[in-house]
Image 1 (spheres, rainbow, N blue to C red):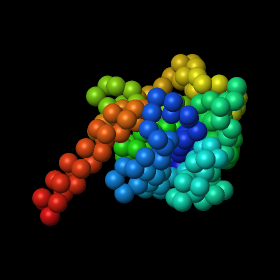
Image 2: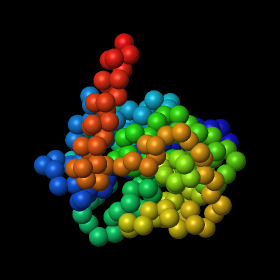
Image 3: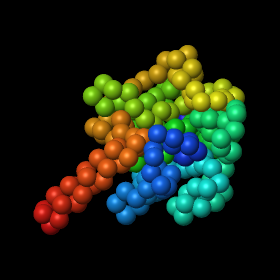
Image 4: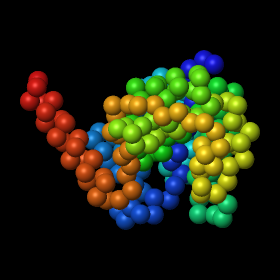
Length: 205
């Protein structure tokens, strides 16, 4: 299989644990938003990218990816959730040789990590990134699991599929595979990390 699976960026969650004035994915993180940072890293991998989001965030997504690659799903209705979003993203890229599921609230996952998990799908049905033995994202699925992925519904996501098939962990030197933005404290910590990194870079220059 050609190592060109599609990255499905999952950006349709309500983000109910985040109590800020705007959706957590619209919060600033350096020069981009949280969503923009996740999309930027996905695009930098040079793999195909599809974004699954809600109408309120579609314009933000379309600033970085082609409108045809933005899949809009309903929100706040029974029967819709992570599983539904995964199914919609996979169905929108049905010809892909596989899919990497990347939550949009994980803006620190590096492009090299995405490529490493993509490469693992050449030989495995399911692959996921792990850092120091801890399982993280993205999680990848080969094309043979298409029919199961597009039947997903509700909030459980793809956990049952992962449990049914042998999955390989891809060791990466990328702590970002474990970092998501669920709360204001999470966002503040990432902003501080970014400021420290920029200060180190400025000192080196």
